[in-house]
Picture 1 (tube, rainbow, N blue to C red):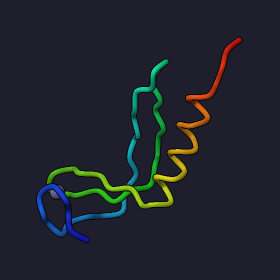
Picture 2: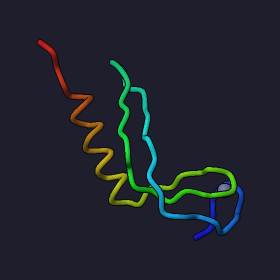
Picture 3: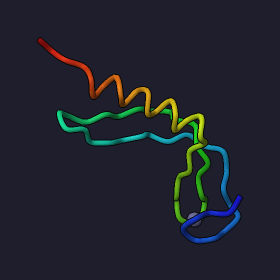
Length: 66
Ligand SMILES: [Zn+2]
């Protein structure tokens, strides 16, 4: 698998801390499985992982505190 950023073929299995900002706060998820470029640090998630992240973010977005 080639890195989208630097085109090197040094993507390795790794884990990453996923961080994103929502309307009402921040979400940090640790140890998310990914492929990481050893050259530039670019991180790529599999479709399954992206789906799971979406689910997690969705439930965060819809959380209410009333
Ligand atoms: Zn790269």
